[in-house]
Amino acid sequence: MNKAMCLITFLLLSSCKMNQDFNNLNLDPGIGGIISNGEHNFTTSEMQIGRQICSNLKIKRERYESGSYNKQYRFRSELRNCDDNVWFNQLFLAKISNLNTNGPEYVSSLSRDNYISEIITDQTAVLRQVCDSLIVSDSVSNTIKNGNVKYTLRFLIADNFDRYELIKSQKDSNGNYGPLSAEVVSFISQSSQLGSEYFGVEKEHSRYTACDAKRFKTMKQTWIEAI
Image (cartoon, rainbow, N blue to C red; front, side, top):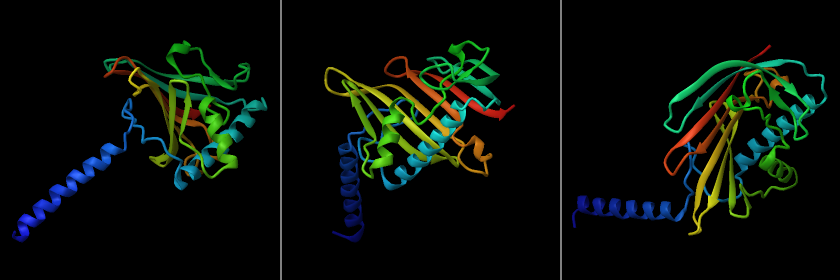
């Protein structure tokens, strides 16, 4: 066998092995372009980013809960339907309210169906359990299961912003998980972006909700400025 044939054989075998390894990862399907990277403990890099996010969110929550923070924020809300058509795109002002017992929230004159009122903190839903675990352990799973529902979380840096991606999936009768929704939030976290009083503010907050097996609707909220 000449060298060319040997090289071709090697490449074919390597390709088969790579495909087999990829299939063995058994990755869950994603939604809105957000793909689950499988169940595992957070890497060292993810832990570092996650701890910084949790710390900034804790400081932000305490600042807002003090009741002395009176600034309003300007956001842009963009909503897309199940066919990916934009049906709402508008700038709006929101103030911070502590009247909700579940935590601080954004309040606007817009209908609540047209913007994301939830303010992400270290005490928010799934993030609360993860943030608490990151304080006490160097071995923390990226996955939380509750009955037939599974939450998979990823910490990363994207476009220079600290970010998390959260996928909510549900197990079907065959034991396979299918995505119900996903949430992606990028946070202000560097002085080169804004002053420290804005650390932990959601620069961009997107929610993807499954309409059916192939389509999803989108709610995207972008922070513009403080007033």
